[in-house]
Length: 250
Image 1 (spheres, helix red, strand yellow):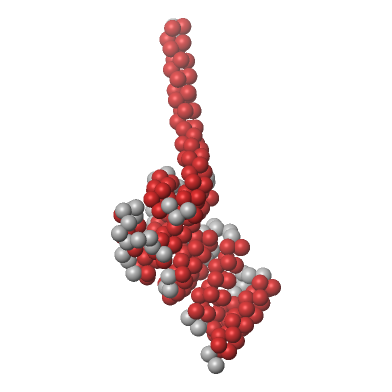
Image 2 (cartoon, rainbow, N blue to C red; image 1 turned 30 degrees about the vertical axis):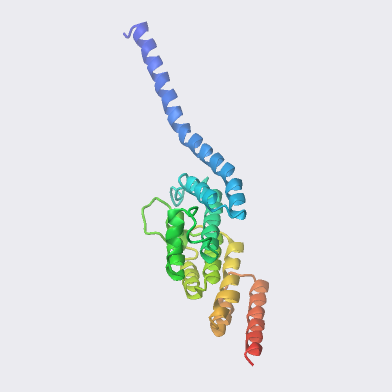
């Protein structure tokens, strides 16, 4: 029969083991919580620095933030950092696109090296580079897979497509949107409002710039996820834009 001392030691060891297990169980949550807290505190500073055109500070805060931000852990699991990931990526794309379109003095010592490297790219590779980076950021880590637009939030796609229009890369923007539409529904990203914004940008801005009027209207005629009113509004808008474009060419 075990002695009282042995039994006490066993209970103590068991208690310590349980405490250790509990500590291990909650530590990821604490880590996620502290990460989210840090990101929330950094964001107002980064947004203010961006609005004030403080390039070094904005870049420094973005670098700090993205050292904490990782892709979603898995397809099916919870993703507490989802909203922060979206906010920071929108800010990063907007910051870099603004710098690209209106760069500060080229000989400025304030420009970080990565920013200088981006300014050396032509518009199409620049947009392609930040698009690929976004795919990598939003594709879940598990199961391992090639980065895909199936997981790209609509807000990020719209930001990227607007950047392509701003830099005169309309064909690149069209390709990004069509790749996203081809994979729409493959991932559980229910966002009807975001989907409508993507189609509005696609049919009322991207395709009209390419003068692909017939395709824009045909696409909307066969589209079945929008509400009937929204679809009709877009079709009417395409026809109005086409008439204005034709009148301007006379």
